[in-house]
Structures are given as C-alpha cells and as structure tokens.
Length: 217
Image (tube, rainbow, N blue to C red):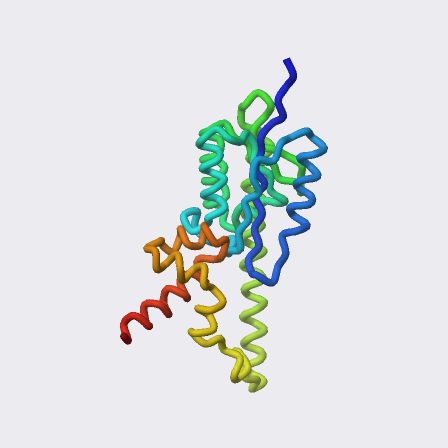
C-alpha cells in the first residue's frame, strides 16, 4: 500500500503591513516539497508576536486543523514567527502536542516530536531558549526606539505624524469596507480579524470609529 504524504500546515507571521511573507512561504513550501509533505493550508497573519493566542487568528486556525486531525505537522520559518513571548510559544506547542502534532522550524531544521511521537528533548530545550531570545530581541528593539525618541526630543525635534497625514475616520472606513461589513453583521473583533486576515488593532480602530459614528446619529 502506497504511503500517504504527511499533511502539514504552513504558519507565517509579520508584525506590520509593510513586511512581506513571500520568503517565509517560499522556503517552507520548498521544505515540504523536499520531504514529500502535503501542504493542507497556509495560515498567514499580520500581528504582533507579543499578542495572546486568542488574538492570533492564524494560530487559532492552525490549532483547529490540529484538533480536527487534518494535519500532523506545523511548519514555521523560525520560533519568533510563532510568538515572541516564551509563554505563548510554549503553550501553543503543548496545545499541538496534545493532538500529536509536531512543530518544525526551518531556521534550525528541528521538530518538537520525534518520529515515534515522543517529545524531542533537544527541541524542547532549543524552543525555550529561542523563545526567550526572541523576547529579548524585541525588548532590545523597543529600548533602541525609546532611546532614539528621547534623543530626538532632547534635540527639539517634533515627533509623530507630519501634519495633514493622519488618516481620517471616513478614509479608514473606506479602506476597510470588509471589516465594516463584518462588524455590522455582528462579528466580534477577533472573528473579523480572522476572516479578513487583518490585525486586531486595525479592526478595533474601525469598530471604534463605527461606534462613535453610531453614537452621534
């Protein structure tokens, strides 16, 4: 009997709309092709790596695929794509492992589960270390940004958006008509973000403007 290819999901994440996911998807698809794995779905999101699991539509989708038995592995480019908070990354891996699903990350070419289904001790240690490094990297970046802002203020520079560049509520609502429609249909912020693939912060801004508009009527 011919062996069936292992079903997998690809998980990609970026923090802002200015970043691209093409390289992550290309590299992970190449891994799947080389190993004979079948990609069931590519779960993509634009959201901060510090967000909680419940605010991560792609993580939720991957978990649903794992819980339903549709996938056996999840492919990510590096641990920080899962999360930049160790608690979130480790909890998510445990959620996957509860359904016998392994996390593979490309940067180190290692999986959380061994071929026999048992936990990979080396991967567990590396996961904890890399998740902590991802958080430290974010903290360092934040400190550099704050230091730069403080220096700019010290030199008397004006910070924030240039005058006249702030997006008006009307323009925001026009840009995100899909969110407006979903919120109008009674969808929650999380569900609207999941359906549209947009960040929860964007959905929350749209909802805030919609609520203010309704209150003024």
